[in-house]
Image (cartoon, rainbow, N blue to C red; front, side, top):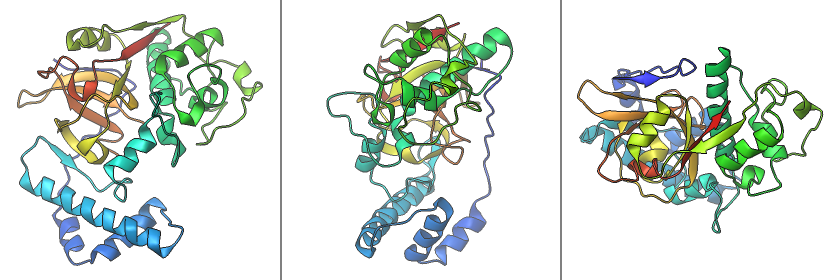
Length: 306
């Protein structure tokens, strides 16, 4: 059985990558790094920083290509926008499920995933109840939901975002209050025109994938995961990689399914752009032995009520 919601568009592509691989073999790692920098608009402050990140890029590319060549797992890794980062530095970027060791620096959208997760869940329930999909404003949460634990690009909780939307009597559309990747001053004029409302929220019983499945069968669910290990380079397939339960990243479970090989998975929407994963989504193994779920996906999940 497979279940996902109409607002999710998945393009699972399994391209013939032989031509690309052959081309890369003829290029030096420095040339490949230069091409990668041009593709992602990356710049460094000086040559020392560039050389340091070139070495990280080299290590990551070699790991990714070795992993894919082995073909031992049901997922593939890709050379994406994080290819010049260590796993430790990326975890600083995404450490936005607030806690005593929370860090906030670097590409700010990576530290506002709590807002993206809450907005995606709200968009989903709004579409289910009204029949219309409206893109809602993450920036309103980043700018205006700052009186409690939520602190814009320095991290927050999805549950507190739901509370803000309830108390604010709704949330603006993305078109009315667009995302700009920075902490800003709350624009009370733009937030005065809510495009969607919720009346409450519920938490899914913790450490229970069966309960999470029941919830996801009805609507998109905000979940928290440990985004360590291979997660950062995920490209396609069902992710079964090693990861812990140090929850540091907010994403949205939007469906579930089973592959033709019988592997059960969660269909999850990330906030890292369409070049990451399967057009911005990841399939994560479902019904694992650990009660917490893969990467802790069943530990802390919640959903809005319209």
